Image (cartoon, rainbow, N blue to C red; front, top):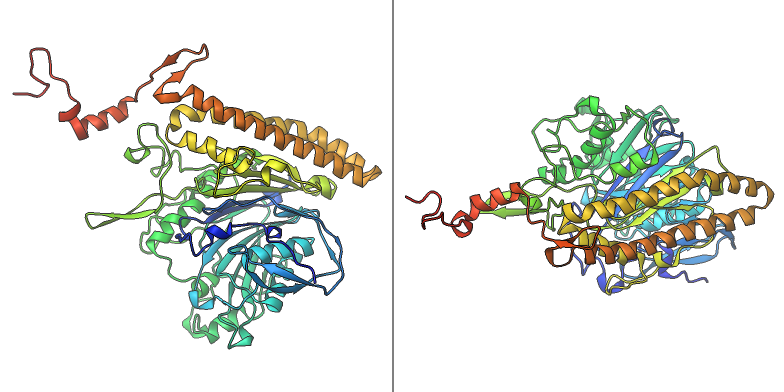
Length: 556
């Protein structure tokens, strides 16, 4: 029997910081995904994104595929607490995996949707992360991934709550929503999951953010819609839907009914903001995410008005609702430096009034964010790119890792959530982010300049790298993988060094409330007039100086 270490799972949480020891609200520490069809992208690639938002340090992982002894039992280790959840049977061949993209350019992301709590199966061996990890090792296309997810759940049981998976290959992007069938310990027939999957139409995008998105769907369109055979029948059996009700079957209404105002605010606002930027002429109303009674949920897909390049999709993941009434860089809560940072929890009460902060797409508790890019016109090892950044994407920087690489950059696999480490990329990106949050408007320009320089340089270099690598694939595939590995790791190492320098630059440039100019002279920029006006309104008697002659302004 082979024992697989805990690190084989895609998201590793320290045993000292298990889910039981770090209680959190799923609406606060949750995830956002975007799915971009080939026809909606500027270059014809298929793209998905995934922001893994939770208070832990994930590690970038690599699985080396190859031949195995079919049927050999392998331990499945839970990511929450290193507990062995059970054993699965190995297959004869697996694909290599880098992060959440495999060597065939199949990529997966996710976002937790919750749903009916009674449908969670505590006996299910596969949580969403293990399910994704095994699927990437076994499937080569999006449709194969859907079938593999279903087969794995039926064989080993599904232990998570409701999930939405973003699935991409070089041809298609899919949205798959899944939920368990309840405890299987006393009802073995409940083993497995019910699910529905939709292909994103060409020219359109979809987005998911911790709320079920699929409503009614056709049962006779297998090219674009797939579903568990029992998805409707199971809902009827459990009383979630009745054919006599006069309404068509809706996945969302049956398995994820009645989201409350709090969930709409935290979840649907993110989908609305992605769509309002990709398709502004639709002029989608904010009513649904503000909780207006009777407001319609947002569509599952929207056609883009301008095709999206890689940096456009990155920009969608770097969103605090700027330019809208919900702009988190505006108002008193943003402080004197217009920071979008809002500490958790998201909801609070003051003098009996229930309130909530906005929950942005770009958030400080992001463990990592990825953008997977899949391209049909290039050989698989070259065509799949895993754009990856630890931490908050707004104050961090994506670096490209080709799916054909055979190693990972060392700084990206180092570190521990419990102690700071200078040689850990996760900690270094967090250091820069945390140096930025409190003095946002002053520090951010330096961060954005460094981010722009690295990402743009990569995009300018990559066409030449890919031409050379594509030629090498034809001549010597192993040499092509080494070439891609050396370039990807060298680029990531260079970014890590740049971010170390950026951290020291921020600290020395902005020390003690001063700001050094390009000549090294320190000055005190003070506060902007808007903030000072608020201070005067709130604390006028304390800050107001008396006029000449001894009487303060307004004295009588």
